[in-house]
Length: 281
Image (tube, rainbow, N blue to C red; front, side):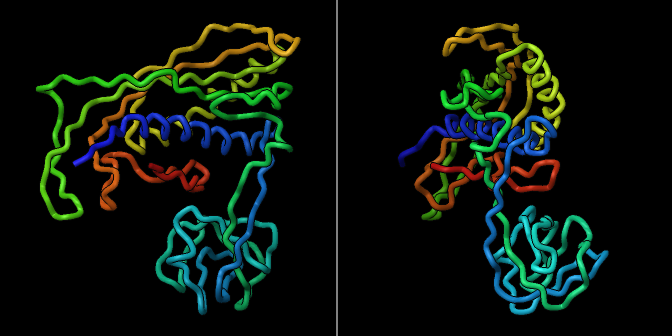
């Protein structure tokens, strides 16, 4: 059986999770916000909604296949206003995270919304590296600096695994120590320090999501302020270094039943929005 090392996948997912959550947090920031573009996909059927109620009742709808917890939903009777799905009971019944505030109706059509970031209309660049096109913007860079595996032979943990053919085998696992560098960069010290303050404020969302998805924080360190000369001007940088902990398992990633133990397939922020963050092999 051919095994692949899942450690690199976990490291990538941790880095991308932090990027996604910072983008989500800064999309609500009054000064350094992202411009979020909403794409709407019409759903089949019509729904009944009542002002002041969070219950949505459908007719000819396919809620169980069209929506999941955290999905964005818009109603034709209240265009441009987004709601989020709290739960889906059946193809004809779902509950919103907040009450419907539009006009009561029994014939509203619905659409599923997908948010995407419009980099051309953003006040800040957030990525794993700052593209040269965005050097004029203040930026937050999330860089995975290292991932260190701890193998102790006798102390490795094993887990029974049944593959797609029903054959039983043992999977070897070990702890993984991940170091992630999160830096704020701007063309002046005041903006940089303001971004670092916001970064600390928004860190609560990131740490909650990591903890809920099997990633522990061992230590957070404040980095030394520095300045660099790029593109004929000075840039000022500061930020934090996070040491994280995860556990990985050897997996046959070609097996359709294979999963990464302890790591969920999606991340939902404090705003109740599923980032749609999936494991990709």
